[in-house]
Image (cartoon, rainbow, N blue to C red; front, side, top):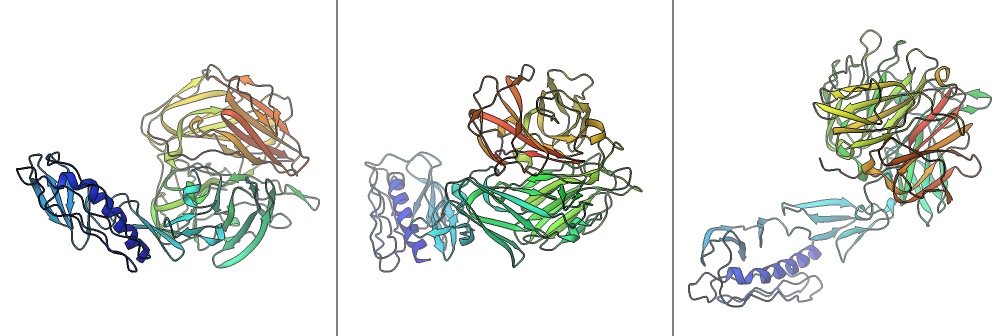
Length: 607
């Protein structure tokens, strides 16, 4: 607190000095009025110096901590009236200039302070101080302090000189992308056998320093490990049975794991990791690229899949990172039936309160009242994570065989209007195979255009949350929408394409492409591939080697290359380019597969 008061005095004194010329213009002869710059309250022996009344000079600033005296700014020269509407301060008085040497209003801010140009405020915007292990920074409107915990488990401390969190994982050191230090791996519904198969996360260290990893669930420590620089670690985690072995809507306290590191990393969750183990086959796998907490918001449209003809449902899993998070759910226009529970009705409306690590898993209705969670609107008063998918689905229904699908959904504000959609291959050098593509609207009357044109492709989505599909598509194409959309890609079953089974990914908007990626492809699958989309002619490298074989995507100005990934080594790979490119990673085993974006930015894109 003493440090904050000292810093406040220093800032206020400086601001008062800058405002001195305007504040001193009250008398008609141009001499100073009653403007008095008031120094801030010193801390631990500091001496606040007041302003000079009756002159155009501004007040001197208050001192910082430890007795140092800070000097205010220089006042204005002469007595020119301050411009009309200018807000100046005289001590705790906030006064609005009339442009003629007088004031139109005067407000006493006491017991709060007056900030020149802003008026009455609790604190000076941007001023900061440490309070134990927390940083308290004054809000931009001066209404109060925003508190950030400088988490030592993320290698973060509070710098007493700046009042801000510092460290490789400090909030101001991280951009909005898939790279971060605080993640919530979340088990989702899957019919896979719990033994010998297991849930796991893969942590890829993107830095040149070792990364210490701590995994907790509630108050319990579940795992710790260290990931070497530019390396990868597999962290096996117990199944959460109330989420995995479940097809009815439920709220599970502390259902998610929390994974923290002291260096920026990327994290993928595998449900399950292995597709074959102890001479058994899992038959139902998928994986998700997790987004760190610093990339979360409180508004999402969801992507999932409709209830299967067998009755197995789709789902969304919502995870909170803060206590007292209120989550509201509204169905999309094509939603249908929902499994009621945990505050969510059979129509898909409802509200639930989640604490840190709690998971709300909501399912579409069973065979008696089937539905689809796609297009539902998730609104929360604090940041949340949303994963969408299906317990085990056929694609197309009922082409064999069913497979678990899932993917993390980016916030609405991070969605784009331009996507490049490229189907997978199942063999090196082979032709693209059939996929199902779904476009989910976030606004009414969304229009879609394709390059090259796609025969029979839908061009309009009437309502926000509505969706349209292309089935059995093998084409590379660009889609542009009049408003933000989600572009979902689904692999078809092995009996349709000859390898794998359904998997799910989300295409990344061109606006969120990156120039560098570190991604992981598990080496225990029979074959893994990466689709790289890049501006035509861009020199792209994969693990340091040039990427070749690019094929133009219509007239979009982009091309795609499909490259087989080696199972030798750790499974970590890099993609680098001088221009922003997109990366999609997928792989196959017998009657199973995985698919996820290799990475993306999660910047908030303007409308």
